[in-house]
Length: 179
Image (cartoon, rainbow, N blue to C red; front, side, top):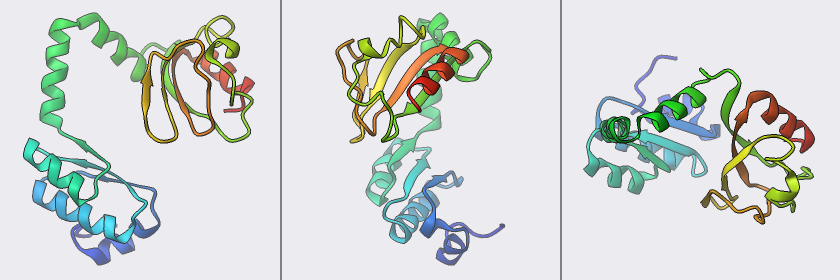
């Protein structure tokens, strides 16, 4: 549909009251704040990811109800600095996340309620020994991110496992643990 995203009726017509996620990327920071505020009012459980040009707008977007704020200029500057200080690391992450290394991927695996992975430790899951995967992080159901979790870390229902490995090994892990 083509409409003014700052108009409440347009947001209703677009399905914002029943949507799960909204990505807010209007060219104006002020319009993004207004859109975020209106969308949050229409749907309190909506995941809102908003863009801001100015660092000072980030706080306003969060106050308006955004869950996450992306600052493209800041992100680009940090990335460029990393290209200078850690070029091989940046290249590896780029290749893996963009799918350019066909055999390798970084994937997020949400653990469903019936998965046999629940209650299992990383060690007992044989993620590394049987599947060749590195468990890079676990995001718990409450949103906490645990980087480089230890072998004795237990998987819980609602966790999302961030794994690095070959695509076919990730798929075998998914199949084994019904993810």
